[in-house]
Image (cartoon, rainbow, N blue to C red):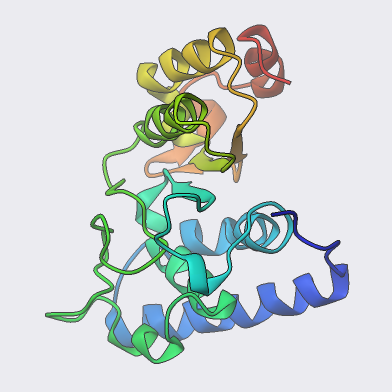
Length: 208
């Protein structure tokens, strides 16, 4: 199912609402990783309103499009986006990070609709997405998979193994987006490891 062409002003307003919610969630829960969450909001909004079919009625359906937030420390951004999209109840956001909540600081598979995998351990999301994309092809299901990665997790060898595998298998139903915000836990991304030129590296691995 194709999404209708998104209105950029509408997307920008959604991003602003989600960012406001993230600040409220972080303050109420005392949870860290606010910067990592804020930096990927526009990517998630573009995915859910411009790429994937995210009808709440079919969330969990075998034919559904899938979004893998590989940078799992930014889980609040995914939760807030799912609420904005109507896939989960917005009232759940008030419980983020609290004992017994369906919205833990680190995502667990199926904690709420729209969470496809546990991704707190960085570098695994693209591999998961590649497996799902390949399964879709084998099962002749038309769904698409979007994997959202951080620049920091591109330090992980597993990312590049998945990149090579995906190119070799010509997984045209898989889209990877890197949140190149320039920061990792201990410093600037390009100072920790030589990521640049990141675009050229992905092209060399066979990606568009």
